[in-house]
Length: 309
Length: 265
Image (tube, rainbow over all chains, first blue to last red; front, side, top):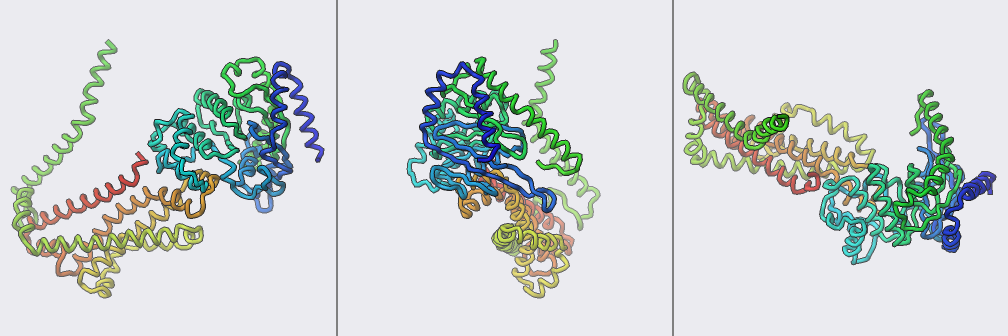
C-alpha cells in the first residue's frame, strides 16, 4: 500500500477521535457496517484526461482506493474539479479509468451495469417527450427488466416521494424540485442494490433541498440500498452520510474519512445538534486548504490562458 | 386612494387582452377591404384590379362553376400532395442518413446547404425538358423545393440532443437502437416539423412556378390566362382560393405537429 493511503487512514481516524457524543451509537452501528459485505471496491483507480494542448495530460484521480459496504450511505466531498463525479462515473461504468479496478460485488466493472447500479444526476434525465410513467417504463426497458409489475412498482415508488398524482404529467409541467423527486423515485423503482447520486440536489433552492434530503434519509433507511452521493454541500454530507470521504484538490486523492454516527432516518433536529456543527466545522477545516488550492490553480490557469474546467 | 388607482388601471387592461384583440384585427381587416373596394370602384383600372365584392361575385360562376378551373385546382392539389409526400419521406431519410454520423454531417451538410441556397428557378427550363410539360415536371419542381428544408431541419434535429439525456440513457443500459428510438427521434420532432411547415410553403411555390412557366392546366395556368385576358376578378378569386388552401394546409401540418409535441406546452 502506498504511503499516502496510510496517511489518509490515520488522518481519518484522528478526525473520528474528536467526538464523544455519538460514541455509544457508533459502536452498535459500526459493528453492523463492518459485518456487511463489501458492495463496491475501488482499487488504486487513476484517471488521466487529455489536456487542452496536445501531449498535455491532466491527472484527475490519483491512486484512489475505497471500500463501500452494503447498505452504507457514503458521501464524496471535495472542491470543484477534484474528480468526485469522475470517480462516481467510473464506479457506474460510464467512464473507463486509466488504471486500477472497480468491483461491484465480485464482478469487475467494465461498462454500465444497469441491473446493479442506478444513477441520479444533477440535471433531470426524464425525457420531456414522455410522461412520468412512460419514462419509468422506458427506463425499465433500457434495463432489460422482464418484470411485468412495472406499473405497480412505478406507482409505489412515486408514492414514496409523494408524486403519485403526477404520473401522467409531462416533465415540463413540473418544477425542478418535483422532477428531482421523480428522478429519485425512478432510482428506487429500478430496483438496483446501488444508487449513485451526482449532486442530485445542486440545482434546487436551499429549502427544497433540505426537505428532499430529509425525505431521502427516511426513504433509504427503509430500502437499505447502498448509496454513493457526490456533493458540494457540507451540511448535506453531514446530514445524509454514514461516512464522508473528503477528496483533495486536483489530482483527486482521499484526504480524510469521517464517520457520522447517527441512525437513519435522521430528523431535522439532528441539524440543530451541536454534534452536527462540530462535524461540519471539522469538514470545513479539512477542506479549506483544498478549496484555496483549487482557487489558486484556477487563477494560475487563467493567467496562463489555459483554463481547465 | 392607491387601491382605487390600481383597480382603475387594471380593469381596462384585462379587457383589451382577450376580447378586443380579435375585434381589433377584424376591424382592421374590414377597413382594408373597404378601402380596397373604394379604390377599385373609383380609381382602379377594371382590367387590372377587382374589388372584394367583384371577387366574391366571380367566385361562384367563374371558379367553382367552371369545371376546367375546378379540375385545375384538383390537379394542383394532387401535384402538391405528391411532391410534398416525396419531400417529407426522402428528406427525413436523407437527413437521418447524413445526421447519423459525424462523418456524414461534416461531408454532406455543406453540400446540402449549398444546394439549398441555389435559386432553383434557373433549373426550371431544364426540368421541363426532362419531365415534360405535364404534371411530372410540377411534381419534380415542387419536390426539389420541398426536400431541402426537410433535410436541413432533420440534420439539425439530430444534432441538438441534450447530452444529459444520452448520458442518462446510457447509464440505464439503453442499446444503440433504444437510444435512437427513445431519445434521438423524439428529440428531433419539433425541428423536423419546423422543416415540414417550411417545405409546405416552398413545395406549393415550386409547383405553381412550374405551372406558370409552361403548362396546359393547374392553378398556375389559369392565373396566367385570367391575367392575360384582363379579367382580374376570377384571377383574384383564384388567388383567394389559393391562399385559403395554403393556410389550411399549413394549419393541417401544425395540427399534426401539435399532436406529436404535446409534451412541449
